[in-house]
Length: 384
Ligand SMILES: NC(=O)c1ccc[n+]([C@@H]2O[C@H](COP(=O)([O-])OP(=O)(O)OC[C@H]3O[C@@H](n4cnc5c(N)ncnc54)[C@H](OP(=O)(O)O)[C@@H]3O)[C@@H](O)[C@H]2O)c1
Image (cartoon, rainbow, N blue to C red):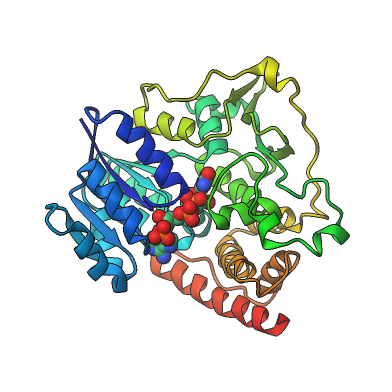
């Protein structure tokens, strides 16, 4: 039996992970599940899966969690230390599916245990890539990518012969505003931005997909995970979200992974890896899909692509600043405090006024993250 812990168990990725695990109760044993404050959903999942430990990051929710778990024998925890304890619970397989840089310390705690750590939560890898990779190397932890694009690349990339890879091609749906002019995007509503054409996801990543910052973060994530020069990672718009990414070899062969736009396929790949497991996904109906289209991205209408590329190339603290400012700007948009086009503008402004030295530890990354959040927050205030 494989023991599993899910960090961010109540979210979109967490729920997809639980769906797979609950289909095979003889194969997986749940050690710990975490959430921020969704006590109801967390307690239900913990009881259904007979988890040992359930944790809310928001300590104020702990009394409710204790009540919800009373008499079940499931231990309840609250606060950052309890989340770290859950992450370090020694599970064979840990899913990192917290949203944002809030997942950094929990992911690091999981990596310290060794074992397999699955990265859906891309923001820590963007902000603290070097620190995370160094920790994984030191502890022997195996990092597996759950993001559909990176999982696709992982399945196609010949890591024994990286020098034979010519390019990585990251596909991008283009989001709900792929065909919109900048003029049209001025009036984007929150409801339009969170409605992704192909994927059902949490609010933050849905907005990131609409601005294309998600693809920018994924560009940086790909550069962290795969040994290839930055300028050999390309982005191509693929509106159908069927080809999840491609690897181009020196002999002209291009390997791609295809599948339905459902996170259960890449998550299942990491759950069973190096084996495979069945999922409820219907076979891909290529004739029904009919057309697979590809087009060039537009960094003018979607400046987040340019900002992320520049941050990746500059390195050091730039990706952490990009990510922190984006988290603040997206949060402000979700609270209807700024308009859609201001998200990238706030990120660009924050990058322009803060340029610290490269971080070499988790604490240094978090200090940069905190300062960038203050600067971005001031910009949000100034825009209102
Ligand atoms: N959704 C996708 O299809 C998808 C695909 C690829 C990658 N990802 C990445 O996976 C991560 C999760 O995305 P998602 O769409 O699943 O997000 P989501 O639906 O918003 O879920 C986020 C999860 O994190 C928890 N959480 C939020 N803030 C927290 C905090 N400060 N401390 C601890 N836990 C916290 C939430 O708990 P509550 O429910 O209690 O708030 C929830 O369990 C993101 O980094 C995203 O970029 C997502």
